[in-house]
Length: 155
Image (cartoon, rainbow, N blue to C red; front, side, top):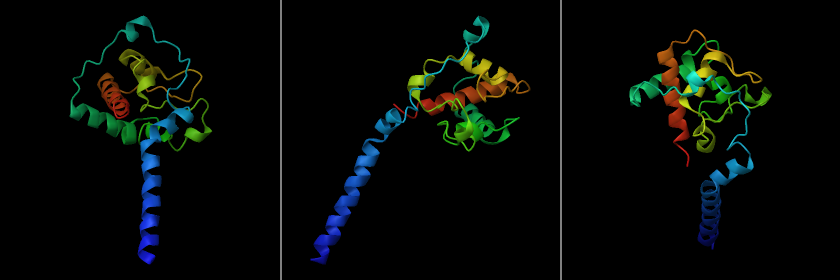
């Protein structure tokens, strides 16, 4: 009898975990984190047409991740965008609009490398996104490779 009760509880737990993991992407849609509707100002044409000059190599993605999590100044990207890049960093609850969710492929595939470069360099008017004018071009391109790698994690 105890064996049947134990087995029943295991099956209930298994069912709950299955539901949670199978439908996690649906939860993102209902939470309206993906896609994000934004009216970010467009970068000048000469920036919009820029393409990342660095090859998509693991070393550049790793360097971009280190910048995002630790080294970027005036503030590390993770503070707003989160460690996972999902826009849910420690400062995000107090920000309006919310930080960009880099994991949202639907949103990120419509933003050019040049637009990302422009926003990182100059900030984003009407948001809490600060400018990083002292960050060398190469480091910005590394960050962009890292950001792009996050969007590829979801379908």
